[in-house]
Picture (tube, one colour):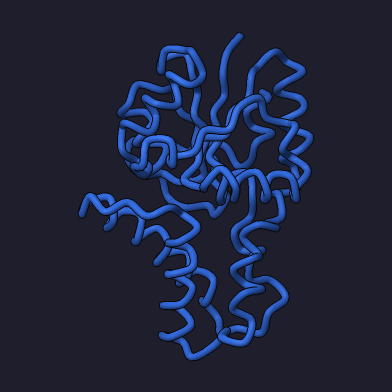
Length: 207
């Protein structure tokens, strides 16, 4: 039985939903997300791991300070990362993939607690067979050790796992670690890292 590994934030769950419904300046959510990812990479290069919840909070505080907006809703905004909305096709696509014989795993930067709460809130927790957090190795994607650890956790050679991500850097990291990859084009971005066009959403994995 083959494994499909899924990135969570931006692939299964819509990170833009964390700021939806709040009166914030245009680009606030994108700036917060960019700073969050920047912090994972800089901490990684410094060898100074902090978990994803801490970095998400630090990135939010920076964005509030930079924009002068969002301070009154700070705790609600941060909590939004535990209540992210799934993309519309995700639940049905995961069910169809599992019915087709695939085993499904999350491979994510999120902490175990973050992932459990967000996936449960989105109704996806029982749709996955395994949840692999970078907390287990204390390095962030796209470090090869994350994908290698995931393969070990799933009990399958990397080459027998297909990793699915909406982020080209993430898919490229998995491919460099020996996994098969499928890029999901959530934002219609140009192809990069030699990954090709990809699929528009998870229904493209059913073809």
